[in-house]
Length: 165
Image (cartoon, rainbow, N blue to C red; front, side, top):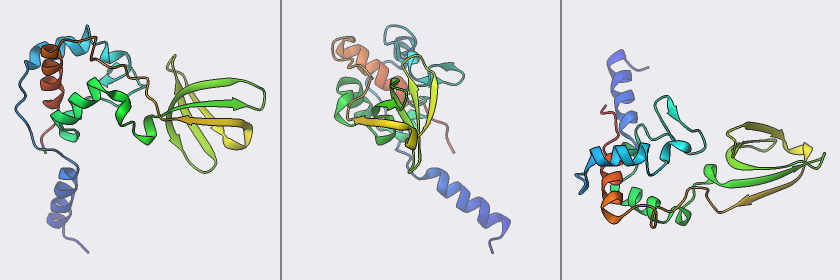
């Protein structure tokens, strides 16, 4: 049995797992913030606090979980490493309805996806006639959309998004 102090210490340790060290980016974080909210269109799919979309992962603490190098690679080549739980899926129901979207959750018996209109769908697999999981993402590449300096700015902003333990 742990004492209250030991419980607090274990909880503090667990909160540090998976965190990446803070890095000093080469861009301008203020410009990056404006780009994320404007020209980049990031909040169409990603959320920050209560604003934004729900197709992509929330950005609120992305700097604590992903290095600047990873963020840059994701902006320039998003298709290179698509996590299992953000892969695109297409299902066909017994009634012939076809729905595509981002896989949010899947277990042995069920599947939950969010479609391009941000609608949530939950299916029992026994009610599907087809399930196709794709190794692609709907996240666009910013290689052509942003200049190299703008990518630096976005990376500086995103890598600074963290809550300190």
